[in-house]
Length: 338
Image (cartoon, rainbow, N blue to C red; front, side, top):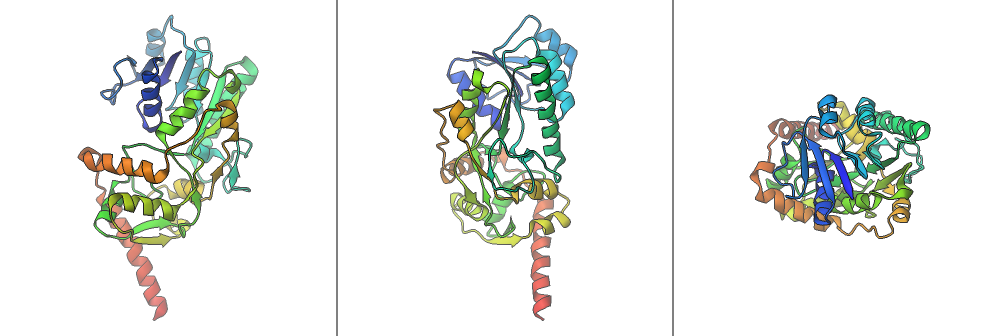
């Protein structure tokens, strides 16, 4: 198989790149070269900014691919560019959308690919929906061979997956745990969530590549494991070797008093109970199975992050904000008691 990835070094795509390279795929990546040092040696790099359409067109002139996948498109104009570049150069175009595009709030917590797409809380999700609509139109009107893939919360060894964190990532929450400081869990921590290790996601994605039954289809790829947020945070604390000191705070309150996009990230996504039905994926890729249990995967992540100081970016602003939120709740409770 000959494939071209736009991106290829992110949380989701890096695992796919690694597995394809191990399997002997002729794989090309278009990116700016900022994170290519860890790539397998048999991956071909087309170093360019994908937004420089004229330059990319020159670099891929005379080339064609079995699969082209865009991991970094977020708005329809980027897919309009992709269509111009690849409409006659690929047998399958794969777009990475998002499971956050599904109906919010849900009328049924069990999500299938038939669940309506609607998210009034998060512009990111609405843009992904618009991207999907553009591609579906190209498929229907022009026969553009699309496959839409919807990941949910996918994690790797480079970052700890969490519900509430600041703009600089999740390390500060882990640091608070290590210092026995209280950490914020949104809601009461009992809503269900799905964490998917990127190596498991890669297996499903690769099974859709070159799959004629996937043309014109939308498919989500997630683990079948459902966890409460309390269980997720407990597993992280356990991997760190500490006792969890949790403070539960309503998601709406967090959104109202924070400088962060919790309306989108929480109210439009993580605050909702979701359980994914992966039946469609398993029909298309019968061998698919997500085998990395979260407590196992997060232990690998924690070990990797602790061994790499460059991944431990501190966020003092978020740390101070957590203290203010927790202090305000404690003061309010004390005032009401008095």
